[in-house]
Length: 269
Ligand SMILES: [Zn+2]
Image 1 (spheres, protein in one colour):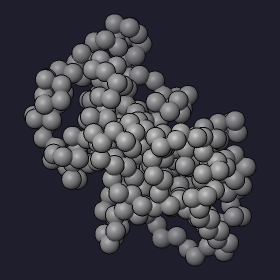
Image 2 (cartoon, rainbow, N blue to C red):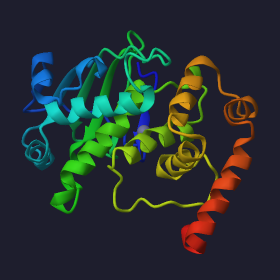
Image 3 (cartoon, helix red, strand yellow):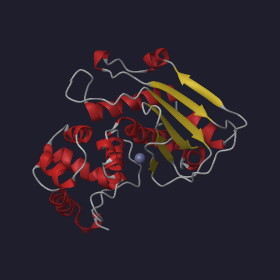
Image 4 (tube, protein in one colour):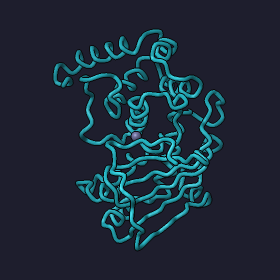
């Protein structure tokens, strides 16, 4: 039933989840979202129906989550940030937002960190599975709010980004998700700009490369890149030259050189 699944950052174990003893479902109604969001007038994007499902209220990760964040405000603000970074504003008309109608955050006992799914029947409804074990492991406690918000922001990108009809490299999909997280000032302390490996290592490695492109070619560059993934199937030999006039290898080479010039050999690994 899953048509796309992005694991973050590593594949969670896909073991069946036993029926929970204590389950709590929360649907965040639009009226609650209205009350909790900053006023942005008609520039605000339409929000999907947001739901929070907690499989086990007795899990220590559930208590940490509920104590650290107000899900209604955090998730709806994260949706707004994702849409603003990928699509500018609802009134521009120069980009098209995918028709995601609902997002359910599912907190449950599982391995890994988080992943996002759609369904064959209706891919407009998304579920973000978020590990209670991982939430319980976040340390120090002062990191809980930003780490939870950062992971949710990353997964929400998967609910709204284009993927070249399934042909986009996974490293670019994950890089865009962490580029959004980076630009929401939600990068974890261990992230740093690294120049080792290929451009499509994914996650923060690719995110810093995308940030270089955004700064070099101007605000809105990654938004245009995402929009090109809406229109075209991905072919590296066409995709990058059509956007930037040169190959991705040349662009990444320029990025590595600039990073090394700025940081010295400390940034390579
Ligand atoms: Zn991901």
